[in-house]
Length: 507
Image (cartoon, rainbow, N blue to C red; front, side, top):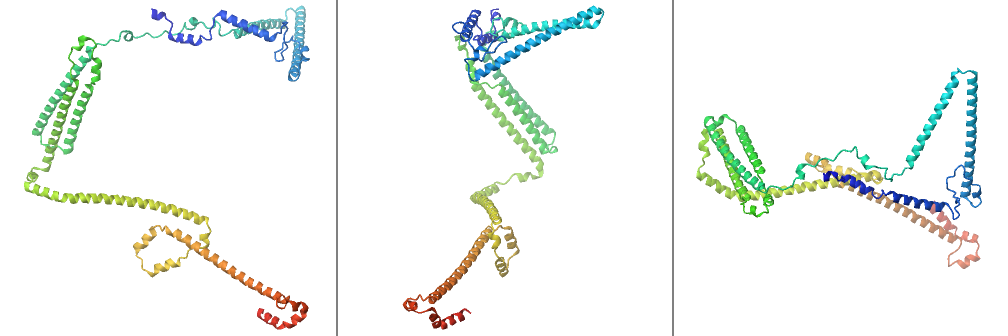
């Protein structure tokens, strides 16, 4: 009952998490009083007059005309706009009230006139009923609006805002704790030892049963061999049947061993602490497991021997009874075969090593050949791309008459021709580039030589013209003084023969 009367853990956690937000009423009232005093201190001066705050929300009765004198800038503009806003609101309310009063008076006058004129008129009654209905609706909406405002102002930190008893009234009860958990966790100390003894006895019985089944199967197999000839069945059928039986027995024994497996740690944990249990004799589990393992290994060996014998017996009838003499070999022939094998063995080992090394060399050769072919292919692709981008090979192609002449000079077999076609010539692109470069170099050299010869000829011509000018203007050093005193006509008369010879040479 005490456990049920206690507060649940979830409620305790919820209370601890909300404890910092929940306060008593006295503390809340004190906090409110302090906040109110601070607010009044900010909003009132020493004479208890309201301080002009530009950012306060004005009411319809608030006068802002006197506060515009001491304020400048954006605050003054804000106050001016607020003043116009309040003025407009007051005018709107006044006009709306006047219109409403006039409308009500008109409705009442019309209602009274209609009632006086015709009491049985239904439209006046309907309008009056409609007016009363709207009035009731307006009052009801005012009440709802007031309660909504009260709910909005109600603080969430009050004591009566969240009642845990009312909230958790319809919640589900906590689940009952099982009796096994509530009870003491004391375990019987003798149970582990009893279980070990039972398991060891069960394992021994299982092994003994397996031996009996094995003997029964051996006897059954011998009876079947005696009754039915083995040659009537195929070899594959016998082998499959033996393999199936062997696999089933081995899987069954392994499953039994796994079920009876127990580690020594469990035995140490199961040993009691009391002095009464220390005197009891604990069975040696390791020794029993080892003995069972030995028995199982003996069983497996016997099973393998049985399979080998059965296989030999199956193979022997298939060969036939007529070949019994060929099965037994003479001793001399076996000795001779052993001597020949002893002599041939080193040669065979040497051949095996040589074949292994040759195989390794072949693999290395294949690897090198593949890598080289890949490199050649990549280089050929690069050469083709350069040939497409460059204009040197197109302007200076390699001639083909040299290679055709060499082929025509000597006889080529069909195998060499096909191998040369299949083999990728990696030096062909390089030869094309070398020939194009050399031919371009030769052409450029010829052009340079021609231009140099032309320059030499032009220089010689210029030199001759200079000498002619020197002769015309008498600039020889030996005749410089005499030429100054002679006239030009005398010079032409004296050198007429020389001019004639020059003209003839030029013609």
